[in-house]
Image: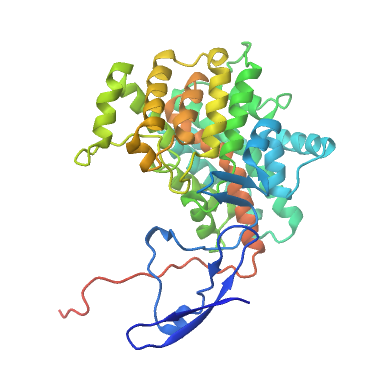
Amino acid sequence: MATITITDNRDGKQYEFDILSPTVGPDVIDIRSLYQKTGMFTYDPGFTSTASCSSSITYIDGEKGELRYRGYDISDLATKRTYLDTCYLLLMDKLPSKTELAAFDMEIRKRSFVHEGLKNLFYAFPDSAHPMAMMSSAVSALSAFHYEHLDIKEEEEFQIMARRILAKIPTLAALSYRRSLGIPFIYPDIERSFTENFLYMMRAYPSAETLIRDVEIKALDTIFTLHAEHEQNASTSTVRGVASTGAHPYAAISAGINALWGRAHGGANESVIAQLEMIGTVDKVDEFIKKAKDPDDDFRLMGFGHRVYKNFDPRAKILKQLLDELKEDLGVDSELLEVAMRIEEVALTDEYFIKRKLYPNIDFYSGLILTALKIPKSLFTIIFVIGRSVGWITQWIELRHDKEMKIARPRQRYTGPVSKKI
């Protein structure tokens, strides 16, 4: 095994640590014995250089702009397979056959109903409540209705739990939305596919025909696929952190939802549309570009740059192509689109953005598509939740199988007073 030697320049002492190699990507220094050997911790705010776990689920190469689920390129999955194919892949570590997919699909349809008692929770919220507040509460409440999932140990039990949460999340999302409008709740329709059924529960009214076009299903299904998994981001790390305590899996998912709600994470596409609406017209774009480049101005151009990707976000490439293909069929707001395309043009040609690798990210394009689907901004992060739920629960299962798993407990660099007396 390869090792690395670290020298303490204060006293010349040397310490040796193992180097662990992944199947692909940068090697890692195994510092689990660092404190024991040296009496020191590492200092890494935001964990930008720290691997918190070993995982076989997702691989990202930020420099090349690559994203793979279980080894499959995101472009192939998003353009050649459905979201449920991707869910099966993440949960079972293989793509399903037609027979396996049909059985998986039907199981998800049948599990999409929620306990009637859970509906009462939504009536306790005011109409003005944000759907994300209701969503996190409802998912947490699922642990009361399915308490048996707290002590699961067998793989079959893991899969039942995973399928249950995957199936019920869209139903809870639709209930959250409809409660925010004060309109009647709609039951799932098991004759409809996963993505079509969500749009149905969002739009339908009793005794009225609901038109859902194939082009809309394709667009939203692609967005779900692109959001399904993304390695150890803030919300996934939150899910793993809560899971490491032995908490109920639905409590861990609820914590992930709350982490995702932040504007720097899942709420970014909502901010993109709000900003495009604020800019308003193409002739104002240059004014806001100038503000974005001014170091003394607090204005930030939303939808550009990414913590991991230092190249074009591969998910953004897929959505840009989808947007180009479907903008007329979807009826994308022409004025918003013109503003967005002008900003995109500047960002891809202006030296300021190129030098800083501020490429359009997934949020820049997803908001435009969701707006065309007549999904309100307040529900954008809910869409993210639906797509990401399978990733969170797959990470939860992986952590439970990890024999090296320990309760999450980062160290700190203390900067307060040493000692005070009363």
